[in-house]
Length: 317
Ligand code: AKB
Image (cartoon, rainbow, N blue to C red; front, top):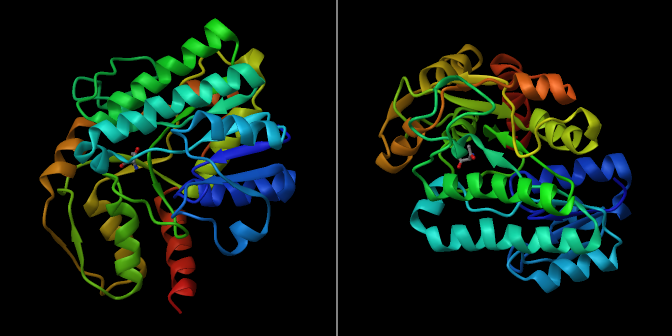
């Protein structure tokens, strides 16, 4: 990987992945693609090139790929699960219309492509505990429908046209840098912001609802390592289960209380997010990722909680 285009570089994953890749390959090799209204700022704007690249505009993608001699595209444009339920047509346009644009440019200009999938690609009839790599994927959300379709389409382009497509199924991602917008797992980010600022947190997800979660540094490493993996060792491509921790609201609340004893949490369950959460697995089995490309998470709930609190304390003074 030498020249990389990140589509969605100012979003929750993109803002950190762009900086991490610039640290590894040099700022000039990593192009931050963004849409008007979501311009890169600060270090992200100053540390390397940026271009307007709207995923729904195939020509813009092709031009950026030609201009910077791109060989790898990270396609991070998507609506998260709760937003996608309210805007299903737009979710499809970005998630699948956009992916098709990326794959066509990649086919013509010989790029590798990373497009994240999600725990949202599974549905209520998927085995909930130890969810296997290869299993039923019949999601009931538009987000999930786009993720399963994206996995199939990416595999099709690999098989039919030899495009080097690879992917992981991300759990809920937790970070102190850029907040997520409109996901079902967002509560596990918000809770830290409230705790550190000494505010009472109202949790939209019921106690006892388990979902896979991951600290952002592990997620970024996963996204980079899968693209650097030896292709001869990959039996799967789109998309690998990866996992590091699974908890419900009570477990994360009690963990934060170990460090901030006065922290308070109450419940006001959001039926949309709760319904989505209940249709997702409790805990994925990531054996295939571990065996095929050496995936190994570094953060558990305790290590993540210590780091989140420390970093957010700095952020909020
Ligand atoms: C969401 O909650 O929509 C995302 C996801 C798990 O894919 N964070």
